[in-house]
Length: 403
Ligand code: PMT
Image 1 (cartoon, rainbow, N blue to C red):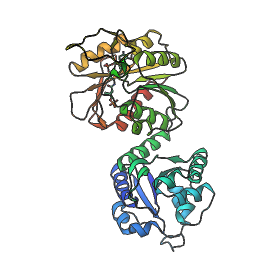
Image 2 (image 1 turned 135 degrees about the vertical axis):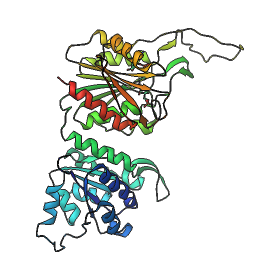
Image 3 (image 1 turned 45 degrees about the horizontal axis):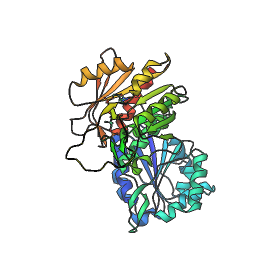
């Protein structure tokens, strides 16, 4: 970084304020210069000294404090900020900004800044779901403010539901993507992404599938969206907590089987510039589907499997010269050789290979260990990364190829 990136963190009065300490610590370790502003209520939960020690910067709490060096403090902080993070964001601060109230240092800085403002709402579920709070959030989103969706889970008030403060590491990843996306290197690009597993039905209650959680594909979708892309995500069945983590602006098309995914990917292909295939598509499906539940009459049961459509290969066959095709390879052996074969067979611009025997790589986990392999056999190796970091690393390589 040539100049240190300045992040202003606004801390409001909620119990999650203590978790913001870890956010500030992680932001600092990433290399950002962090300035904390605390509201009066925030100081009921945690002291300014904690943030001062972690951020190595004086914490601002007062609009009318006499500065050592004269400046109009709320204006200088607002101008200095490359990004303002409000975490935890209470219903109160959201309501104030949505209705144009600037009555303390934090709300004044938010009003006066021209940089991106990211709110991290954290509150009791009923409060979060309150229609007035939701209307305020939509109003702010329409005005260009960003929101990180709260997590679902048990909260300090003893209830369970949506409203939990997200993991600090996820907030920091988001901030990094927003800062990268200030460049908007995918602006105007339409990105078609496949994610998750497919299910190949045997009878009305049974199916063949695999361990894909969708995390990798969803992380790419979210990162591409942050970087300005118009994203279309074609997804096999994934858990609710995965599907709820992406922005509502991402166009999601749900499918179940490989055949359905093939149909949708082919029909969406004409409206995209870049296709990234992270889905773990079943290679075989039962030849016949039994309309009735198969009874366990016999000791052994066998049924025939037939090949599913190879979506990446089908898209490769109609590939236009101005489109980029990125595939994945989940391998347990001969990673490089098998990946290079797939590049050729599926006409890929590069492949993201993951050796799924490695701890922390591949299916279900939050991390991945990837190698980007190019048709000219160039290989870029990465250390273990969170799937969000891996998504950005993949997009960095795609970005270099954008025509
Ligand atoms: O979802 P997660 O739990 O986060 O796990 C991530 C992941 C392991 C699923 C992901 O990182 C990954 O490797 N995805 C591709 C898995 C896979 O099916 O690999 P493959 O080597 O079998 O397929 C090669 C490529 O062809 C892939 O881009 C795949 O989407 C595509 N394919 C495969 C079969 C098929 N019938 N049609 C296809 O288009």
